[in-house]
Length: 281
View (cartoon, one colour):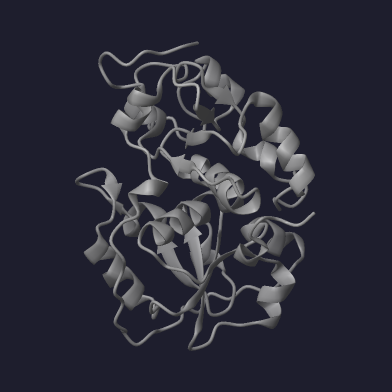
């Protein structure tokens, strides 16, 4: 059985045979471009740096519609451009940028299955040359708030039978044993644990260990449905800062076709730091 929206995925071979052109842009999205993009990237790929380009450091928010339009223009992307995203950390940050693209209404959008991990496992070529683009015009759509959950949405959903929370962090984070992954020791909340009644379904359970590609439909269904994460529910995904949860959001919405899935990008960093928010361990 195929994915609900197979058109949002391309494989590494397809990317190698379909290089970027005037109407198709390849974009690498990295958390750590110094050890990623700058050391080598797929020929013709531009860089979106998750921390610098897609987040507003003043408001701790995604960039505004105006800033998104400027970012697209700088990368030679118009509203009709086919965009293929890939990146480090098993496409965590590529999935986050996919989510932001969808918030601002970009239609023709895909992810390279397996990201940098699969490309490198196949010993495919990289370059250090960075493409140059003539600036273009881009007009984004008003933000689609139906793709995003805020603090008040999560608070209001507590105890509602028609809503299910998916905590995609590691079991050690979910239990409160640790408050951040070891590689991110400075980015954590004051309290450990999870949102009451949340289901712990780590993001990594949706991908194949060997190459980081997404698992087949039947495997994915077995991953979510036995824990009550079913298509009839309003699903809210969260992690620590919203990047791993966007990966699971992508799986549920585009690969399994769930109609009501939102990413809570405030995630545990917001929830665990808020006075008065209930926590379970």
